[in-house]
Length: 225
Image 1 (cartoon, helix red, strand yellow):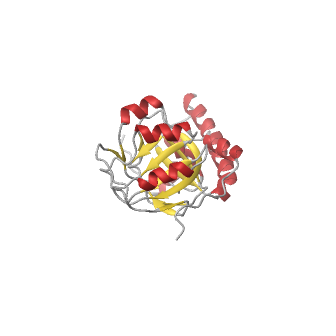
Image 2 (cartoon, helix red, strand yellow; image 1 turned 90 degrees about the horizontal axis):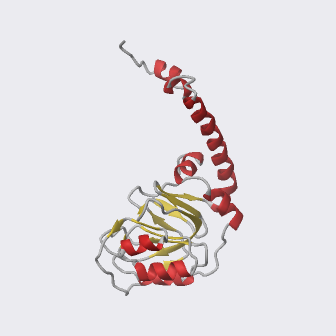
Image 3 (cartoon, one colour; image 1 turned 45 degrees about the vertical axis):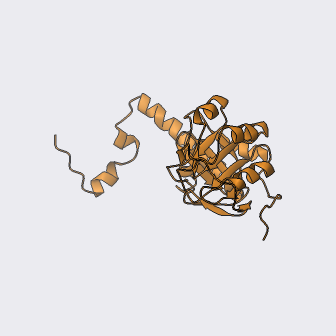
């Protein structure tokens, strides 16, 4: 079998940059409330965020040999995303690999497993999102795959899909849908700008401005004065 595929179709850098200005939550909502990775996968620091094409790595639980292989074959701007069976108590990535990834110009590292050396990584500022922080080490024994479709955080991710992560979590966008999602995100942002302005001006109550009056009436909401 082929373990590593080095040739993947990445989205244009311009598309990644334009999508990256929106939050993960906005993207998730705009594309129909889909694509959110498990809430358990969070950044080591709230200030960490990224947007980039996925280099997918299938690793075995408690084993980080393929993590190192994936980083070796990733290109600048890529997000290395690792599915490792959600063995959250394994620290499969630390400051040495973070240094390697940052030095290569990678956009981020994502895993459903654990990471360690968290304070050092925070000081580096390299975006790392993980299922846990754990000191327990890993072995380097079992081969997996790089740049094959995989399921991570409950989402199917294809090589070249765009991942956006921030303090709220991570969302995946199919490469072929990215342009349309950007337009939908902008529409949502424009609408919310108007809504925020109307709230500041106190033009009405929350239920009025959010168009909930008729819905609440239909559902039989009773308000006692």
